[in-house]
Every structure is written in C-alpha cells, then in structure tokens.
Length: 155
View 1: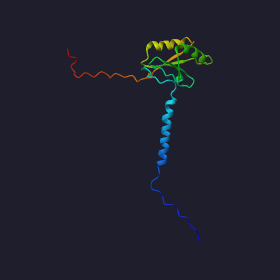
View 2: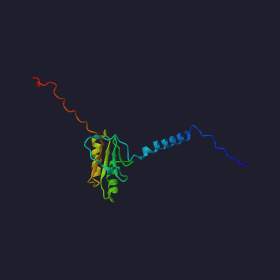
View 3: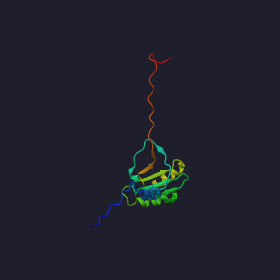
C-alpha cells in the first residue's frame, strides 16, 4: 500500500504580526527620511493670494537664499553671512543658463534683513529674482442679500 501524505489543516486566520512589524519599520524609516527631503532651511513663509507658480524653485539645482526670523542667512542648508552671499551666488550662477535666484524669507523676518539679502543677491549680477511665498485661496465675499420687502428701501 502506497503512502499518501495528508495536507495540513487549513488555517482559519492568517498571521498578520510579521506584516505589522514590517509596516512599523517602514513608517519609522519614512518619518526619519521625510524631514531630510526638504531643501534648504525651514522658514514660515509669508502668505499671499496673487502668486505666480515657480516650478523651477523645486528643482534640485535651484539657488535658494533663505532669511530666517532671527536674521540668519542661508544658502541651501549652509549658514552664511551677508558678505559671503554675493561671492557665493556669483560662483553658483557663473556656469548656468538660468540665472534665477529664489529668496525664501520668514514672514516674521525683519524687512531690512530681507532687503539686505535681496541687495546682496542683486549685486552678484542676478537679473531674475523670485520671492517665494505660500499661496492661500482668496476669500470670496458673499453676494448681497436680496431686499426683504417689495415696497422698496425704507427712508
């Protein structure tokens, strides 16, 4: 008589613990990596309704000068002084066709600090300067309510 192996009994509930472990590891990896994907220094940009889309500012080789709330100036992730901005921006745009430089200023930064950064970038020979802001949706006013009486306005 031949040996006939028996199939194991069907498992009613799958074991999801290994899948949950993998998902938690992936979650931790993404939580650690996501802040590193942000280019430049994090600033709370001013909000504006009438903005232009500047897709080139999102490119990896975009030149972004950031002005923080406390007056610090950054070129990318590196903190620099205002005296160094002109020389370093001049070096960065020397071999480029697109000589646009973008300014990311904190909404609470002093106006004078932002103007000094813009002036330093302009003295490097930059003709195209972009000021980055956050786009907010305009609040549309409600239409006026219709008159309630048919006799006309009261005097």
